[in-house]
Image 1: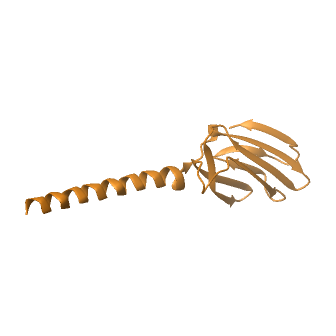
Image 2: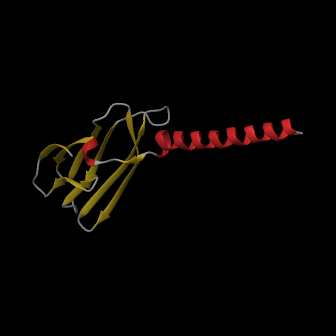
Image 3: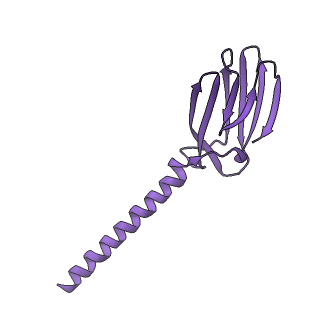
Length: 126
């Protein structure tokens, strides 16, 4: 009888350790963390009413996921999450075009990456 209780305890401990390892792996490879400004290079260029935005990671082995856009008045807030490179997310580069006809500034990671009409080009390490 004692061996059965011992095996059951080992199985429970192994299961708990497996669940912890699974959660840690999911955090690194799938959930990630918000991208901070100093972790990316942003390049912007204006063509008429379109802002071409290119975002590139400074760190190697990092990919972006979960891009979100939120407009608040005349400001556009962009956010993303960074994860470790995996078969699910393998790109540390992002490119998009944004209609800026009604937008006066674009923020990424709560830092202004483009402001005002008439600004033609800017490259900035946030």
